[in-house]
Each structure stands twice: as C-alpha cells, then as structure tokens.
Length: 356
Image 1 (tube, rainbow, N blue to C red):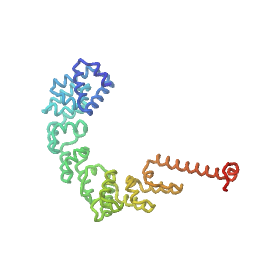
Image 2: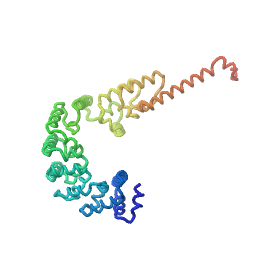
Image 3: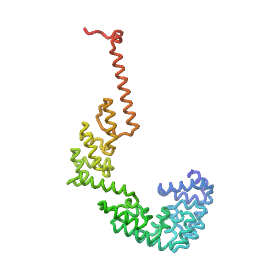
Image 4: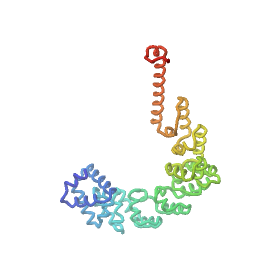
C-alpha cells in the first residue's frame, strides 16, 4: 500500500516527505504506514498529506519533528490545532506531540489550564525536558487534566518513600491517584514490613500487597543464613553455584517465584524418585503448580508409564494429554498384538517351528 502511494506522487512534495520518512528507522516507517492506512479509512487524498506537510513547514515544524509524529500529516483538524498551539510561549517543535491529541481535548487544555506552567513544573519535578512532558501528555491525556498541586504532592510523597523518579516515569499512571490514597498505601506497605516501595503498590488491591509481603517473609525464613536464591538452589539441588545461576538465567521467573512453593515442589519430586539432576535438566518444572504436577504423576503411575525426564510434566495440557493418550494407545496395541500372537489357537495355525 505504501509503495503504491509513493509511486502515485513521485514528483510532488508529499513524495519527498514520504520518501524521507521511509528512509528513517523501521519504527517511524511503521508509524507512517499506520498514517497511510488512516488516510484510506478517512478517504483523505495524497493532496491532503501534501497540504499538511507544507502547513507544518510554514509553521516552523521541522522535518525531524514530522518524522517523530507522522500521524499529524493525516489530521483533518491540523489547522485549528496549530492556531491554538501557537498561543503557547513554547517552541512549536517542543509542543508538537500535543498535535496528536483530539482538537476538543487540546482546546480545553490550552484555554482552561496554565499550560506552560504545568509543563514546566512537571518537567522540573521529574528532571526531564519539556518535550518529554508533551509526549507523555499526548499519550496519557489524564496528565493534561489532573490537578498540578495533587501531582506535585504525589511525586513528593513517592520520592520521600524512596521511589525513584525513573520508576515514577515508567509508571505515570500512579499520578492519577489522590495524594492521601498514595500515602495510605505506603503506610499500609510499611505496616506489612515492606521496605522497598514500588509504584504498583499504590494501584494494587490490599490483598495483593499482603500476599507479596507474606511471600517475602517466607522467602527470608527459608533462605535462613543463605544470602540468595543462587545459594539456596545450589544446596537443594546439590549443584555448583554456577549451575544454579544458569538455571535462573534459563528461567528468570524463578526470581519472583515463592520459595515456599519451590521448596514444596523439590521435596515432592525427590520423594517420587526423581533426582536433583532431573530437576537441573528441566528447571521449568519449579515454576509449575504443585497440584497440577501431582495430578499428572498420579495419572502416569496409574497407567504404568515410566518417565525418564520431567519435560512432559511441564508441557501444556493439550500436549500432555496427547502424550498420555498416545502412550496408552501404543501400550494397548502392543498388548493386543502380544495376546493374539501367543494365543493357543494362533500358535497351532502359525508356522513357528517347534523347539527341537
């Protein structure tokens, strides 16, 4: 689709614009493809893209800014948006990401807020530049409408609790919450002996925080004098610490898994005759539900199936059932064949020579 449009406007300014944008990174190229698809859906012509391109250049928007925000080339409301955005005492290339916001929302923001002050204060609080704040606002519109005093209080509370600015930036949704609610959640976390506060704790239900605290407490109890999961696995699986590090490298989720559940799984597997070596070969088993593994082993034992490894116990339910049915079918066929071959009547009819 993109190639056809470019070929249809080879000698136009829009072709130059599209070609330059296409020569940029693959991410920007994908954004441009999205814009082109949007053009088709809105029945806008290539001439409209060319007009918007010329308009952006005339208003002082650079090609680099257009490259970062290619969707503005297909915007029907670009003219009025640029008119109201020009009212801000900011470089148009800094505030350009706001052009991707709907016109009614942008208009309401600029005429009902002290925009420059809000952008500047948020940039100072989080130690970023104003362009970054404009990008955030274009993607998370609540930043445009949330009270600045509340956001300032929330950021201060989080910073005082030991949450880094980087963590806040990665989870800006936390700024939607009332400062008092954030403070209550931090107090609740402290009461549950949680030393390191995370932004997700503000959004999570209390039960989740309690379970998190319990898991951490259990982990400390199980580790005892051991300092890390590496030491714990090394001792439980009778392997070197290099091997236990490799197991964690292969299955990073082990770092977040409850040690209580890992311990129960290891003890159960050893009880069933598997060795630490079996577990080391298939560390994924430690991430599975103990109840599910117990159920599968019971089915396998009932059908007199011998397992040489733990791999099949880690497969999806569909794969596991296929394996189980296949083995049962093969055993049934083998049994039938054996009984048929050695049945007295069959032995009489066969040409098997008698023993001399």
